[in-house]
Picture 1 (cartoon, protein in one colour):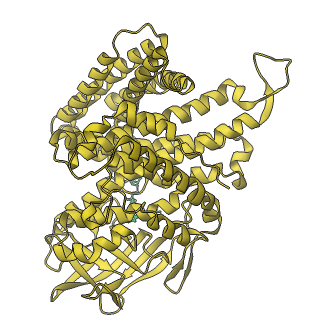
Picture 2 (picture 1 turned 60 degrees about the vertical axis):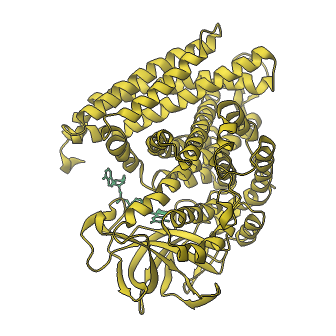
Picture 3 (picture 1 turned 135 degrees about the horizontal axis):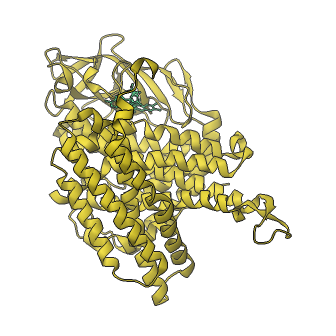
Length: 592
Ligand SMILES: Cc1cc2nc3c(=O)[nH]c(=O)nc-3n(C[C@H](O)[C@H](O)[C@H](O)COP(=O)(O)OP(=O)(O)OC[C@H]3O[C@@H](n4cnc5c(N)ncnc54)[C@H](O)[C@@H]3O)c2cc1C
């Protein structure tokens, strides 16, 4: 039995009403992606997620993975689900047809991923990591590496991993110590990687590790890191599997959440050294890894939305069933469902407004990534600006949303069998891996805002202003408030952009003290932008008597709620960005 309802109506609304799907379809490389095909793909993905993956989510959490002598047995049902996932073609969806993929654009593969992640976050991590590794090989792998690994990885017969972290090197990858010694046409790697997602599994007969390591003569710091492909089993010239490589899973971590995703300690070179192949040029590894990380950061942001949706659905169902207290409008009447209490309504609407706003932003970002992929430099710059905002804010928001999900359940939320607690536990990691929120915020203030003097941020503000103007004059009371609040929040965003760009060099610590509030504020404004656009469409549809009136009326009210309850947070965050730093920096370190 599944308790997950794919949010297809909202996904289709964003796709068909807010994005320019024909323009994306016209980009090279996407083949036949007409609206009917897109809708059919989403429908099927929803069924697969709800019927195959969602029923395994709870048992995956309670049973988890087993480690024995370096081998891993994944949670019951996961191996079979993975086989079905690949056989149904889901793994190959976004990749070029040249390698056996289906070449669908990110505006389709992103909501498909959201559905898979909502149904089973632990499961979804495996294809997500493979996808990042495929992207890196597509862009910088040699012909030989591409031919050897891509067809199997695109089909999902072999999975991919991303090996950055070491005990002493987490956020700071300059500290990576794994060594790679040259030996003929390959290298021998020695070192330990920790926290490697799906670093070992029993889904497939080979695993392709992408590993950061240093050559013997490499310069210190990030400029001395190279990228290697290290397969679990070496591959013979005819493509068959050869000898077992010298990489072993020493243990699996016991974690707060995502219990069914194996998080491995990998030892490289306990014997002769693990055989690895250099990807691209030596000492450019981190640059290449950023290809994977950018994609992974985008998809971790989507994870935040996916888990928020799941928590929302569960809380909403409970709020309609659970009877406590009286309806304020009918104090003598029967005991009311808790959904009647204003505060429970507030919690459910906060969950819904955040989830829908962030979904719309993530799909808008997917459209930008599609355009960027086709060579549009402006779209690329905007996408690069938005990625840390989306990753940082959608995952921080997921922590808030899943915590509210527990709160809606009252005491039952704290009891594991209800399932609300799993969403909270699973969501927690999303704001940590692929760069913590602080690391996203550092990227946002430095590389993305200060480096170009705020130019891309200002271009984004101009787009948001154009959307406000496009709404035009309306007699609708909700739309009027939505516009006014967005205008005010946008002005606060612009003030903060000028502050960050203007003070980044002269007052670095102070700007860093406000970096996460700046990221949150940017996320809230971008969400408000999306909700304002959605509200305008909903109003038009209602006036024209088109489509599902219930959906459009709810969308308009959700946007109004977002304006009143979420956009109003922006003014407070602006104060923190502008003047909150001395309180942070002046406090004595020994008393922290
Ligand atoms: C379940 C799980 C799966 C993972 N999967 C993978 C994987 O597949 N591959 C992989 O390579 N890694 C993986 N990781 C590692 C993950 O990416 C790191 O844990 C994460 O990047 C943070 O690094 P750290 O744990 O060393 O924390 P630290 O870097 O020690 O950070 C500790 C705290 O200090 C803050 N901090 C650190 N530096 C700065 C700074 N410059 N400015 C402001 N604040 C800072 C952080 O924000 C954080 O709050 C995984 C981790 C977990 C738990």
